[in-house]
Image 1 (cartoon, rainbow, N blue to C red):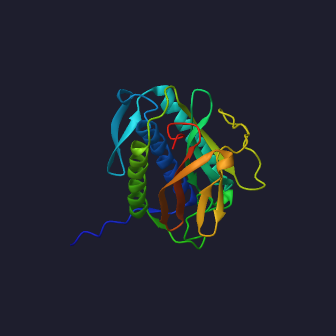
Image 2: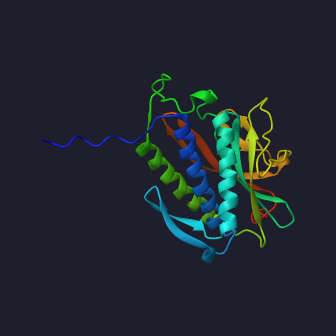
Image 3: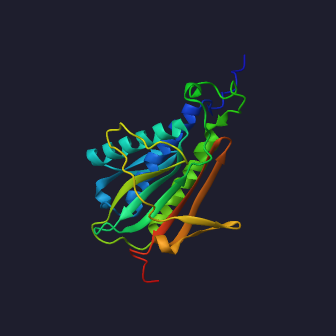
Length: 234
């Protein structure tokens, strides 16, 4: 008797989509820290994700901070109130050098009580995990490529995670690492079919990373360079 064909791995709930993105965001932050040399290379170990060698910071406090930040992002994404996630790199004088952007404005939204309901019950197609991971693998590779081709950061640069909420969303409260309201640092404006960075808010160049579209699993990623930093003399 022939063995049944293997089942295709799928993401079949909103929670599984968000959890998969959360894992990706965690890997992305470590990749950015490594490729931008925010910590020395010997502070990283090589591990594997999406059948791809990736770097992970070995310091327990750094790993814990990143995990907590990603967990808080996951909470906001499940609530459907998140528009963008930013990995912001600062100089030692607190001037913005770069901003790595993950636009999740078109990520699926469902009622909180439906987060664990199968998507087909909600009238939505399931998402192939294989398709998603293929695109996430390519995105991680592009993040590393972009980071390594950019000019070196100034000494003692640092980073943080910031979020932009959708209109009329209440500010998040009650987290171990409370979010702090802030003014825009770099911003963009739409002009026809293109998006340009507003120079008056600090942006001087934008580099596209990748647009991920696998069924409901959708987001865009790019990096913006500010006036302050390694490329401000161009």
